[in-house]
Image (cartoon, rainbow, N blue to C red; front, side, top):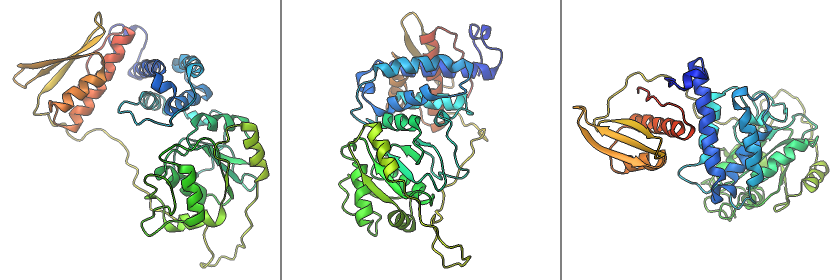
Length: 383
């Protein structure tokens, strides 16, 4: 990344420039989201703000974001939907920028939770508090993403993990895999509001009662698409045999939830250690999809559709993009109020023909928009 003239006065290295750019991107994304009525009622934004408020060991460069998150939390309204599936998700962009700039930061470590090495096997938006024979309860807050953070902050002794479950397929895949892989968990308590349409809470109850059919569809689920694609029949069987599901769907009072956790803290029966191959396993092996380590491109192929020059127009607070052919002839100018409208216009008109070029253009438009909004110089990167 090339630091502009104004930025060079406040950062001494490319790494520091990247951190500052990430903070500015997060500031812009959160500020925009908090100003939108639809986002103030969405679980996506509330979840990210909660994680940011609870973050510990946050780098100095990002400390101001905590205060911004606290102020934003005050403006949030009652969650009406866990996620609207917007094409541009402001908290997702902010979260990605935070993770890229501060890879050492774990928002879910904010409460000092200890995480067992190798467990949970499936990453997700949840809090792990403890493990062992005394931690036998898991809680799903279903569509109530803020409730999980409130319960975790109280650290009830018997609670192993707590988090959201928003969908009747991938969400339940993660619940089944993580719970089946931990032989200490004997109880799953369902609280919070069940997202309409998806109904993961009712789907979990149907799974416990009826299991799955040959196509791995949860029998009797009222959800739209309750098909489990990322668990095995053995994992489902282990989950159903060992775990009791407590239906408190709709409950949002942390005190009553904690009382239920204490009431249902039931250690799993100890299995004899016979050493024989016929003993049933508690955590069936599942074939993991590959983890791919990102690296530098081996080669860069030029886009036959031409190249773009990105020009922030600060006085008008608009972005201008010039599209050139490789004979340097100007083909067209595209102007817009933000990066999103510009890159969609370019994509819909077929003015970019390669995925790598589209990704590069999106990155540069985001950088240019942040520079325009926050008053620092923008220098376009090479491919």
